[in-house]
Image (cartoon, rainbow, N blue to C red; front, side, top):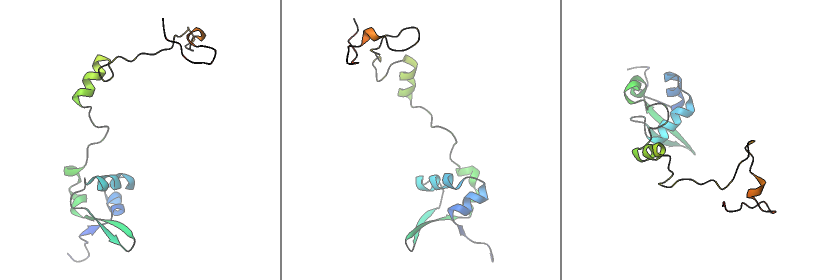
Length: 114
C-alpha cells in the first residue's frame, strides 16, 4: 500500500464524497461516520477519518431531511389540539384582519371576551 494513506481529514472526506464540509462536520460531531475520531494536534482538534468511510458511504450515510414526527405529535396535529388543550385567541377581528378596537381598553390591553 505504498502511496495510499489509511486516514484522511474531514475536509478531504467532504471533497471526496462531494458533500459540504459543514455537513461532514455535523456527521462527525454526532458520531455518524464509522471509525472517525478526534485527535488533538497542538491546540487544534483534527478529525481523523479512515479511507474506508468514503468507500462505504452508501452503507452509513445519514438519511436526508427532517426527522419523522413521533406518534404523539402526529396525533396532536391530527386532532388540532395543543398538548391536549385547544388554543384560544383573545382578539376579535374585523374584515381587514386587524384587532377590533372594542376588544382593547384605552391602554391597549386585551379585554376578556364576552
